[in-house]
Image (cartoon, rainbow, N blue to C red; front, side, top):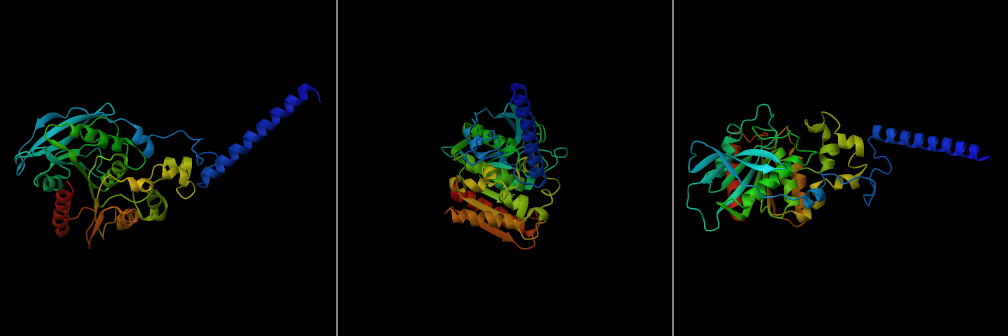
Length: 337
């Protein structure tokens, strides 16, 4: 066979092969199945993504100075400030409270306070979660309610809690900043989170060993499969559109190797401390099944976990359930900090 004909034959064969691969990829994405080669067991065919738990563990979280930006009116038995710190080159603001009571020798036990979803357009540092933060602040803890990036005056874009690493990074940089703050006991820092704040807090607790305890109210604390498949039709904020990562890599059941790298459930054996969960049975925004699943999974790993269910309580623990949940949260933090 002449050389020119051989080259033409090889060219045509290559074109046909590439066309076949393209068809397979398009069909796989359409059917929500991971296309061949997107991710193998040894992760050779996909770049390590920043949202992976291992990627977050490899990052550095440099301690920046906490700057007092504004002195606010006093709380019941604590001082209130607007404060800022640095995260990923961004200036992140928050509401910082410090008790009046004499500072312990090693500093006050401290709680990083993670808000749930509030529209960035309407979020106000001094208006949102006032009663909840007050309940913790007047109980002898330093509290720092972060205005996660894109909220309030914090720089950056509001990236969302579910498929982005941004809010976890803000949380872990706040942890580093608090560890060097003069009034903080660096060995006694915990997390409180509501709704999406529970998801952020859970991820932070499998990344860093320095978070001593976590309390999550109505937390988005299910596994990736819980939220994207098992309960997807019953979770309003998850069914609005198919996430880009699902379009690109397939669903958790179709591509568990990929999703296990994102899912904190794959790392629960490394959880940094005890966890307390609170959930209302009438919560239509975040299903109580997510908290139940996390409790069961943590118990399977031999971890310390408590779950309190509140009959008839909604997503925001209105009326009688709020006071009970707050007292249980305070008692839990006092026990483990």
